Length: 89
Ligand SMILES: [Zn+2]
Image (cartoon, rainbow, N blue to C red):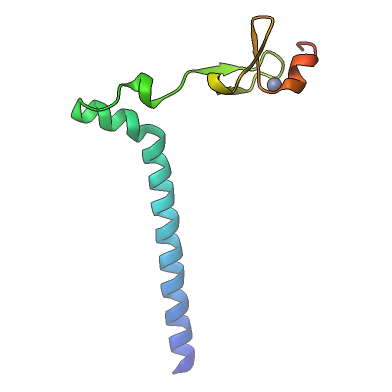
């Protein structure tokens, strides 16, 4: 009997773990495109410019990141101060 309860408890734990994973993934997906999608759906609220930020790429490594985090030098955007000092590949 106790063995049955053990397996039942294990099954319940697995189901809850999978549910939590699915909800986390869904929440992440909603955050990724939900702000724009929700605003477009109800036609109100923030504009896309307010809810998303312009991206730029590093002149050295090509990494894309928000403009607000850019390190600017000589009219170019870099991801970090270390890449400012390195030559473009
Ligand atoms: Zn870089």
